[in-house]
Length: 304
Length: 304
Image (cartoon, rainbow over all chains, first blue to last red; front, side, top):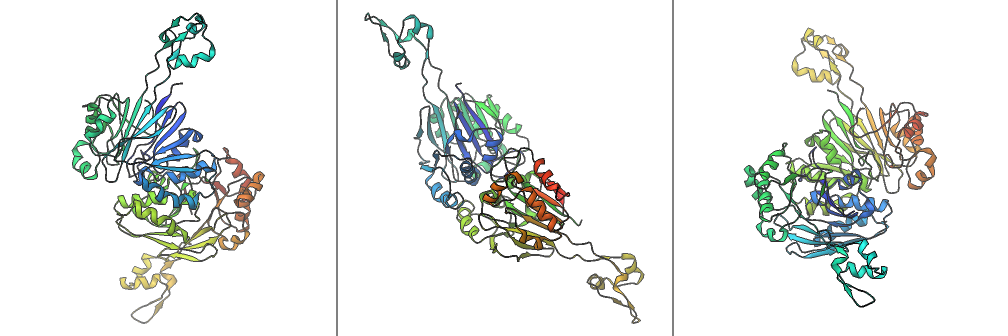
C-alpha cells in the first residue's frame, strides 16, 4: 500500500551488451510511475516488466547522451497508439525540446495527448517537480556534457488514525481530517483531548537519489546525505581509474566512497561497462568500503 | 560458404509486446550484412544474435514510421563507439536525411566514420544498390505513408572449376580466370578444349523479397515472381479485414494469395499485431492457401 520502489529497466552504459539494456528506470510511488532516463529499448522493458503505461506522467532525463534518451520517440509514439489523452511531462535540459520536437512533429503528429517539455538548469540543486506525494530535485553532476542527477523525496505522510479512540471519544467524521492534520479535539463540554491520543506517528518518508553519469564528485554528498537508496554509476573498476577520469565516469570504489561519506542506507551500482564480463569485480570493490551495496540488474525491483 | 540467409531481429508491429521486437532484419550474403528496417532495439538484437557490426555497410528503410526506423540513431552511435571507420550507407526516402541529420549532428558529432544517405523513389521499381554480389531493387507498396519493399537478388555466380581437368590439360594458372568467365582453352598445338570440360555449372542464384508494410497489392506480383523467399506482412487475420483496409495493412490470407500468385518458393509472415496472442491463427489462415508458409520469430535464421 505504501509502495515506494525502484524498477531497473536498463543499467548498461553506452555500448549495448547481451546482458544489459541502456539506462532507464521507473520509480513507483503508490502506483504513480516516474521514469528516470529513457535509453533505447525502454518501452520494451517497460512492457516486459508489466508496468502500466497509463500510470506514467513524468520522465526525467539526466543528460543528452543517446544512451539516456534515444528511447523517448518510441515511448511517446506508443503512448499515443495506446490512446493516452493526459499530458506527459518531460523534464530535461533546454536543448531536449529543440532536438526532439522535429522528430515528434514528423513521426507523431497525430498524438492524442500533449508532450510538455520542462527545462531545468543542471548546474543547480533545485526543486523541479512537485505533486501530491513527491518532490524531485536536481543534483548537479560532472560529466562530459551538462548532467543532473535526481533526488526523489517522498512528502511527509499523514499519521495513522486510531479508530478505537475516534469511536471512544465520539469524534464526528467531518473532524477526522483536522485530526489527521494535527489538531486537538474539543468536546462539546469544552474539554480538550490532545491530538496524540488519536494518532500513531506517520510512516517515515523515504528518499532516493539517482547519480549517473558522473565523475567522482564530493559536492553531491550533502545533497544526498542519508538517503534510503542511492543509485550511483560505476562504469569502471579502480584499476581503470585513468579511463574513468578521462571520460568523467566513476569507479565502483568511488561510488562506495560517496555512499559512505553521505551515510546512505543502501547503494546500488549501475551503468555497467561492456568491458567487465564479471560484475562481481565491481561489487566486491564497492563492498570493501560500503558493505550494503548491490548490483543493479534488468527487471530488478528494489524497495526504497 | 555460399551463405545467403535472413536473420529476423524483430517482427512485431508498432505496439511493442513481450513477444516481439520492432521491425528489423539482417540479410547475410557470404558474411556481408544488409539490414532492412531498423526499429527501436535493433542494435540490441543485432548484438544478442552475435551478428558482426563491422560486416554491416548498408541499411534499407522501407518507410518513415517510427517502428521501422527509431533504432537508427542508437545503432549509428554504437558503430561509432566501436571505432568504425568505413562509410555506412542508408537507403531511404528523401525525408530521412532531413529528419535524422539534426539528431546525428547533436548526439554523434564525433563519429569516426561517415553516414551517407541515399534517397530512393518509393513509387518506382528500380535498382537502388549494387555491389559485387548483390542487387537491391525497390518494390512500390501501398501504405499510409510512401513505402517501398526491397528485392534482394544475388548476382550470377561463377561456375565451379574441375581441378582434375585443369591439371590433366595443363592449363596455366593465369588462364583459369578466363575459363571461369566461360572461355575455351587453346592448347599450344592449336587444338581447342571446350570450356564445358573444365567447369560444372554455377550454383543457382537466389532472390529474397521484403514487403512490409502494405495493403494487399497485386501489382507487386510480377516483381516478386518466383522468389526463393518472400517476407510479407500479415498484421491482421481475415476476420479483421476492415481494420486492415483502414490502416493499409494485409491479412495473413492476403499475404498467402500474393505468395501463391507470384509462385514464390516460401512465405514468411511477419509484422505481427499485439491483438493476436495466438499467431497460429495467422499461420493456419495462410497455409490454407499457401502451404509452405512459416511465422517469423525473433532470432530466427532462415536460408534464402
